[in-house]
Image (cartoon, rainbow, N blue to C red; front, side, top):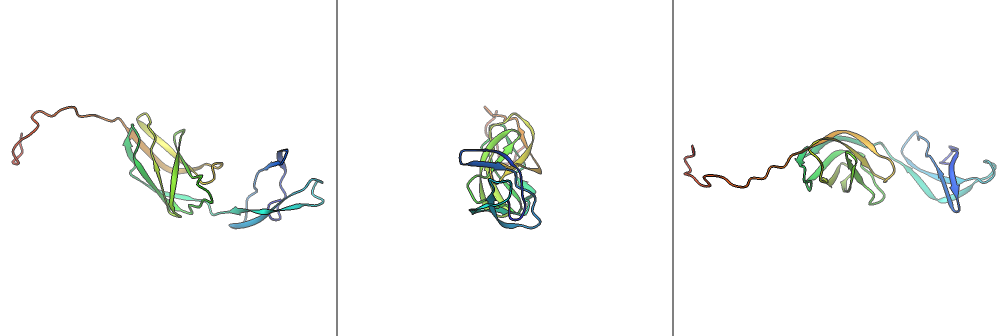
Length: 158
């Protein structure tokens, strides 16, 4: 039971019960309980479950970087909440751990990726992945080996 809403058990084992949280009308904490007798009585848990407003994503800075990764990226939006350190981003299918700066800012470091445009997903609980409308573009890194000439007058034109 989540608050007043009954939900079916998906699976259970020794000391573990798995079920899916139902939708909530408003954000906030609800008590959790479990029944072993088809809902006749419930054992209520001292643990509560917290519903939050859905996160929204408005921008990413920068929106591109080298294929080698290592670029620190800031995602900006609203309702960024986490009760744990389990904040992660997916760039395509590559997962990276992020740092929650505030309820409106999240920083992560890009992984090494093949050049291309990748969808970004974010998880604030390591279970649910939110699809953002944002994309990140990895570009092919070009290494400059030399410049000839390597010097010239400040007047330019060389």
